[in-house]
View 1 (cartoon, rainbow, N blue to C red):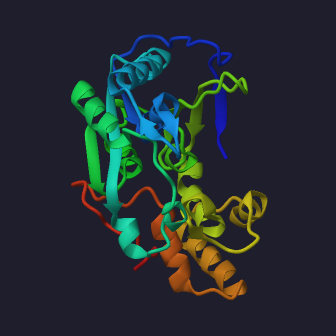
View 2 (spheres, rainbow, N blue to C red):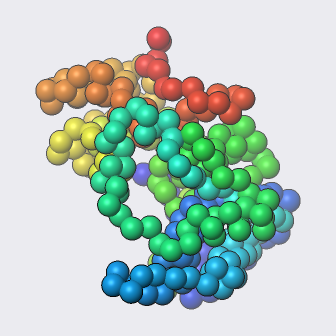
Length: 266
């Protein structure tokens, strides 16, 4: 869905040319991954974590991102609590209800917020905010995330900070053009997102969704096609609208308040 440029072998960080931009980081993954690695114990004896050590490890990861992007500074954003999507349907992320979150996750987020003057977001997710900030301050930021929904939500050259030394997966630059940014939420609406408990059209995977979307860029036409596909599958326009509101990352107004997606023309 997007082009990518690898910047290293996964065994180290190569810095980009220094610039005056700020690395705008959707940082939930950093906190989660750090706590997962740093916690000790098991289900029988319980879990514990040295938060000072976890903070130092997270800071190394954050500095890697700053160096790799060449940015002068970083801005971290985290999600906490229920959001507007949870209010839309009880099925949103319900598949994670029994998931045990790593020890110290909330505490580490709060420590990182203080360390980097970051922000914990309520009512909407860090995903929503970083897309909004990049959209309204494009020249100020380099968008840094691991989620394809974020990286494809706004036009620009973004940074995917996921890396795995074990599997030789490096961090990489991602280029999302205007066409892809328009198409992606409709593409995602067709498929849904099983990781977040979001229902799409049964059996509609990436290849099918790409074929349906084709070269369309007019949002009215795109929505009409999505609704037609839902009805063809025995589903309703209401179900399509719910899915779109769950997957769409562009639902904050200019003043950064929640503005639920509406069908084009309404």
